[in-house]
Length: 171
Image (cartoon, rainbow, N blue to C red; front, side):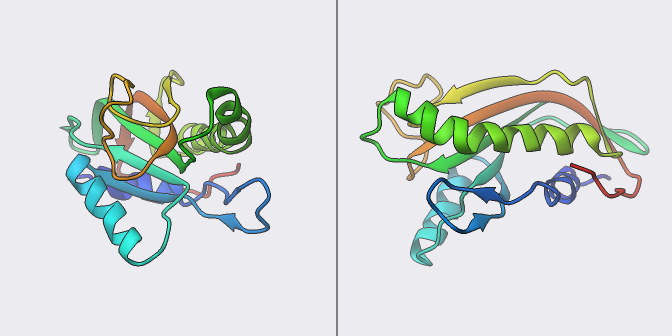
């Protein structure tokens, strides 16, 4: 059986560190996975440790796997690419500061590693949803799905992952 989470982790290790505007440090994206309960437990753990897991790449559960002999087919898989944000920012500022400077470059590198590796086959078709001031799926702002507040991109696609050894990915 191919462990999808391990294969994605191998690939995402090649995503370059993310530079936040006005910060001299660059941060490696954190990859994790699970449902809403797991996400909130993960965020509480980081909060208790006084650390921030951003930028974050979160594989959303549940998803369906069709396990075959040497590959696994994922008819639909979703990731959240997220950065923490300030609730008082309006959307034009979010687009300028969070999306153009951090999330879109991070998305571009996400797509590069997903499409340039030798273990994931994809049709190069991604559905992307913007979630400024991330809240519930309807983006009403009434109910926050996490204990944190994010600017985020939700990326959906279908793919097949094989069991071969990962070769170095050139970005």
